[in-house]
Length: 256
Image (tube, rainbow, N blue to C red; front, side, top):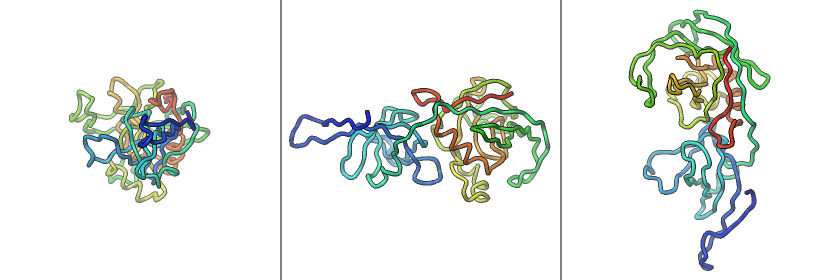
């Protein structure tokens, strides 16, 4: 579809040139999220974001803005727009990978105090291998936590964490930002840290997809990148891949 053009109506005095070009979103900052405006938005005062490398199709340029059809994710099949000044850096040509692969090998339990928390936790440390690199991760911190997933029947209840069972899982593309309060300490300690609020859901029906791949030193059963300095590499690898043509899945997680 790259480079194809058409007119938006049949009136010769008001037709606009529409350019149908496939592009991929890129954040203007280190958050990993691109702020956009939705056409006919019923909640215009609520900011809307899409994750990086979301597929879009440019439709037209009008009134200083570029309009595009969002092909994937939370706002799929809706029309978004950006100011023309931001298009060159935020809507880019790109070739995504065909699916990330994460391999987790357990090391064992160790009580360790993180510099980011006042007390030690009983961490289930593991080694994460990805894209020719490795990172120290924790896959469970042996803690009580409040379930905050509205899709879960346990939403609002206090549960005790446990690691995901050995097996193979699909990793979902991110759809909304995590709570920045959860990762503020990591941002302060690592000024170059990016995309700390981008959390990747892991598809697992028993927990209603409540497990994530994310950065941090506390795991409620998530694949948590304990080695904070490795997060940027892990994030870049994940976000630039899609496993399926519809962009629903990032890749595959293998534990064990």
